[in-house]
Image 1 (cartoon, rainbow, N blue to C red):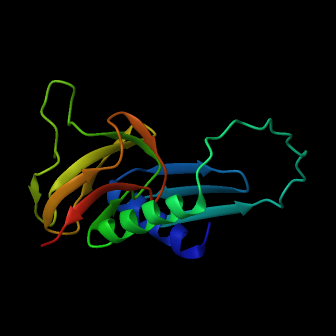
Image 2: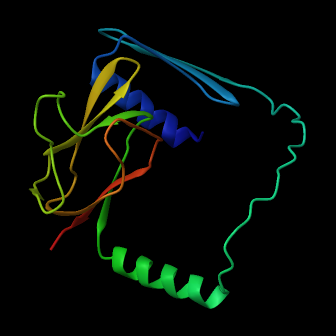
Length: 161
């Protein structure tokens, strides 16, 4: 985890109103405590532990020529390059509705403005609204409702035109 990511996490926690957040990953532990007048951050970074080699069984794959793969990936990337991606700001569980009995925040074809809520991500029993940073039309939803998401994972494609 880089310093900029840690700084963004501190800012996010300060805005969320949480009093304490602990984040543990493979090689790093972060505790962020916020108070009315100060923010305290403790970062522990552990040395990488030697890992046992993992033996994987070969999985039968369909045979596809390299030309077919390149054509598909080029057309897909050029098609998606004109869209803006809304990404997950945190790790958690994504919900596309404010509650089970309410309608979806957005669906494909909906127009969003800057600041419109597009989904909620639950992290440690805190529900964080994900707002659109761009105005446009939702053209693709890349994640299912109630699915786990990672930091910086693409969630929506927006056509800004």
